Length: 342
Image 1 (spheres, rainbow, N blue to C red):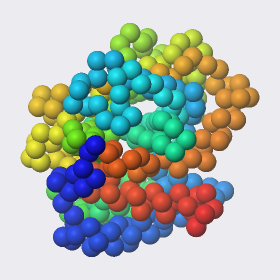
Image 2: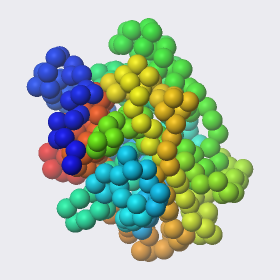
Image 3: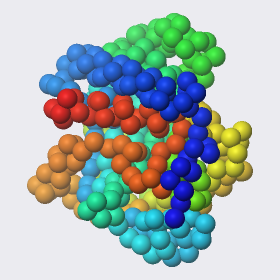
Image 4: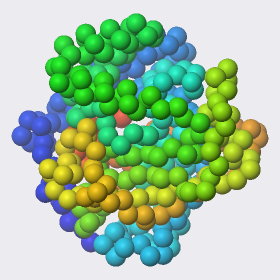
């Protein structure tokens, strides 16, 4: 059994203590809620939506996660057992807080809820770029505040080039801009062929910190030439693909080396695969199905009421790092308002 305080060996709290840091996170959570309100106004939304990842591409509840029978001994922890298989909920999304056409430049996300038992689930949250634009929660919120409500190319450019450097300093602003420009510049033909990363680490029991990623299984056909007239073209393509075949990913883990090489607290640094090679541990299968059936549409609508958070897990797999620790308060505040619980 892993040490319940093992995470303390790897984490450094802003302000010098968990209590001081938590006060900061509570303040940041309230700023996130204000961003949620700005999104409502700028997007002319009917009510509170997700602050980020507002537009779902597809959402299903019949995926399966199966751990490999040759799962390395050092990575066997809790629900991660050789040959173990679990039901999973999968939600694909665009990262923006205001729904837009799929052709818009954006990051793409995937949330996976692994259902181990009635009283145990694990949420895995990933984006299609290996490192965050923000090193920590403070930078993340500063960026989100600066960009909230920007709807035109001119507004985005002004905020990137003028307002963001004022908020976080020029070096951090330059890093953020370069990271995001590189991430959104690629043309995406199919979400099934994207690779997704956790960006921030979690604990993996006695194995210590890991980052996880989903790699598309080789052999899947490339996506077709995108129809830019279709506002939902990524959904259209994925739905057509799932009518014909399963969509399969390999779940891989990168293990912590040291704070300089694989930092826990700085989410803007990509863990180098040359020094922390991804280890395949499980296979995620989204099965062939008709996403336009009445049942599938009802399932997707129900999943939109879910609140995904990396803190939906057990102590052995707790989220690590400043950005992940802040998510507990931030996600709780914004989802409570969205779901009418605030």
